[in-house]
Every structure is written in structure tokens, then in C-alpha cells.
Length: 174
Image 1: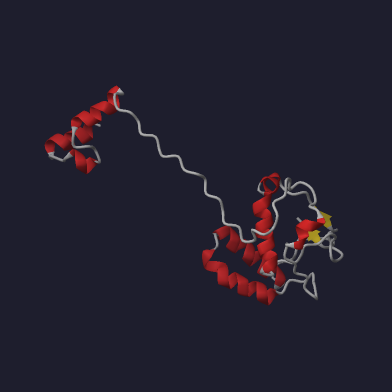
Image 2: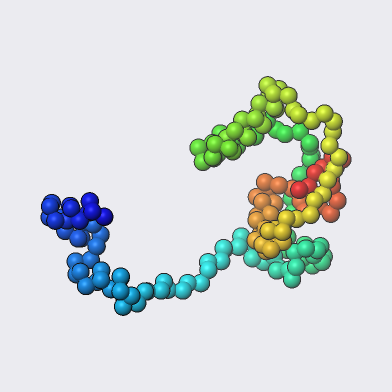
């Protein structure tokens, strides 16, 4: 504080250069409480634009929806579902996204490619059993948006589904 006062008086620096108002009375009102504090204008929270708005909204995302729900839901069932990863396609995807990814994503992608190429051994000692897990609490709370995202992935054929039962032995759903 003394340094600032020193500069103001010795170097003739103006209050505006320090981001202060030109009128000293304005600054005094900050200290004596006579100036009212402006409240920010209230704004409505923004709602994300849905990619598939025709999918009905469920009253709860904790239980299975009825059959009518699936009538508007996209489907994608590839003819030859395989458990093997197509390394070439994965490498192309990684190359396309590499510059946009964080260090952690790049590291995970490199490890996946190294495992596929046989440079690093896979840590599994035996084949994993099929598994189905409950949705996370955040997925239930944001069910409408999770459903919209998954349906857009299916429509773009990023993922297959929907499935009532695992389509093959060893299929894992998280």
C-alpha cells in the first residue's frame, strides 16, 4: 500500500492507471458503506439442445422404460459383432483426435495401441465374465441428457444397441 501511495505522489500516476475511479468520493463510499452494491442480473440456466428431442422423457431413469419408449429410439446392430479391436481404425481415430486431447488421454491411447501391437502385455490373467452395472447416480439425475447422448452415438454408429441381453459371451456393459 505504501508503494502505491509513493508512486501516486512521487511519479504522478493517475488513479485511472491503477483501475480506480477518478472521483475520490466514490472510493470513500466503498469504505463507509453508503454505496449500494449492485446485484448481478438473474439469468435462466441454459438448457442443452437435445440431439434426439423426439425420444420421450421418462418420469424416472432408475428403472427400465416401457416398450413404447424404444419405438423412437435409434438402433444399430452390426452384422458381424466382434470382440476384437480393429487397431487400424483405432489408430486413425487417435491420429484424428490427438491434438485435441489432454496428456492423460494421449497416454491412455498410446497404452492401448502398444497393447494391441503386442509391445506391452495385457494385464488380464484370464477371460473376464460378462457384467452389467447399475447406472451412476449422476446418470440417473441427468437421465434425459444421458439418453440423448447415447441415442446420438447409436445413430452415428459409434456404438451398437440397444440390447436387452448381452449379444455375445463376454460382453461387458458399464
